[in-house]
Image (cartoon, rainbow, N blue to C red):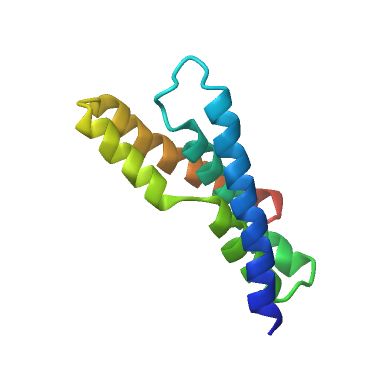
Length: 124
């Protein structure tokens, strides 16, 4: 019974964080306002969180329910595959093929690097 509760509570936190990041980038578009910066940021952060969760929950003696809460709830509520793919399709539909390819490459590279960093920081 504790696992669904932890996933739900952490999922709400992740979704609220996602909303906050989206809102921040919407109000601070920077030099490239049509680039999906918020999606890239949350996906890389979520990959880092899952990497840390994989190593830290075991090291701290936390059970699988905590791993599920952090990885599935927090990171799952924060990250977004659907926004990433939709942004990529939108960029391609606007004939911005280099930007679409860069979006794919950036999410993949940063996600892998962030997950590896999270694992490395926890000694895994």
